[in-house]
Image (cartoon, helix red, strand yellow):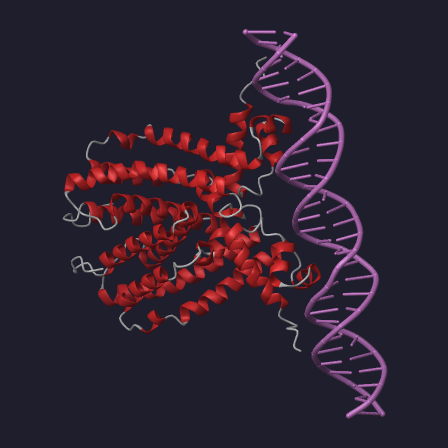
Length: 206
Length: 206
DNA sequence: CGCTACATACCAACCAGTCGGTTTGTAGCG
DNA sequence: CGCTACAAACCGACTGGTTGGTATGTAGCG
């Protein structure tokens, strides 16, 4: 019977992602994470020096796992950079299903509450967001180069804007309890990007 | 010597707004709020049945105080509805100064972390956000009526979008520690609204 | 045998909430 | 006005349960 030795760390990280997205970093107690992961406190403090340490590692783990999701996403195969950017947004919208806590962003949730109590975690969250924004920025820059359009704030500013819209959509979804609110926000983002990157095209079927 | 009796409740609410915006609802201990307000625990539990009760009341207090700010804002005097909507966004941008915790949204911060642990607070946060969105919606509806433009998702959907952008801008500002990121997001929102509500106008000086 | 990967038992600090008591305001009455 | 009676506002020590963290033990592998 392979008891699954050596995987306590990853189980704890996954538990952290699940629990923290639902109730936040501080409300997620070490004991609850251990229970959810099926390990004991001994295992927890064997792999993480402190709870704060777990928070930092959870943000990094989040980056890795989500990076993998986007790297494998179908929109990556689209050759035209403008189409690819728009397909990215549609892909983000397609993720907005099931329980709200299941599609919200770990690092966005954590960043807000640990803002001035746990700077290392805040930094790790910023790294995660900026890393993902950087990937979006590359596609936007390619779309700008391909079409020749200039955008106020540059590709970076627009990439950050896309992430802000998504983070805000999560906040509203959690507050209202309605995922549809988030989807509506992503639709607006899609229209904005379309207007920016295809300025000559008139309103199309959506 | 008027010792200031009878104002403990408001002082506690103001302390709650300040502390929770910086470190979140759960990390804000009752004792810290009392210390900040200059009262004791006895006073706290005299005015609030529980900490959760304070959270709910703080959201309501937040709504009242912010409503007053917007009601007194200069953009309310603008007659043209399109101009008024755009001036609202500019007003929101003008608030993004000073310490980050000083301009972020209490209810947006709270909603995320108490999402499934304190439903009454979540509800109060939703009420606050939707109340403000409703005010924006009225101006947007007036702008749509005045110009005759139709907007996918309606005035309500667009109003919610404006709030999502702002909430997301706060998240990014807190994560990165840079208020300028938030300002850039608001600029994008401004451009989007301009394009929607003044479709015939070409890019203007900004 | 030594090292990693855990488990168990335990602790000190902390936190929301309680409770008996004090101070201040105020209504009613003569 | 002066006095009594009561209520609301507020104080601060205390408590029971929880939490992050530690100390110690042990099973399995190379």
